[in-house]
Image (cartoon, rainbow, N blue to C red; front, side, top):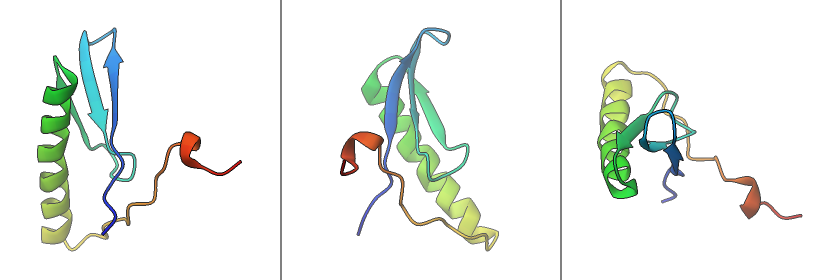
Amino acid sequence: MKDYHINVFYSEEDEGYIADIPDLRHCSGFGLTPSEALAEVLKAKEAWLKSAKDKKKPVPAPTYRPAIYKAA
């Protein structure tokens, strides 16, 4: 099974790392290290998916891929 792409980047404004899942609207996590941000976004992903299931909302398929992976 394909899984969701996760972006991890440093935010000067927040003075820490942000991790987000583009396919899951508003699903993100914060940490002082990339590992902390990743751990937080993985918790957020589980909560996001559980909430969608509980509310019988559609769950988008994992489709996002960064431009660097697209064929020229």
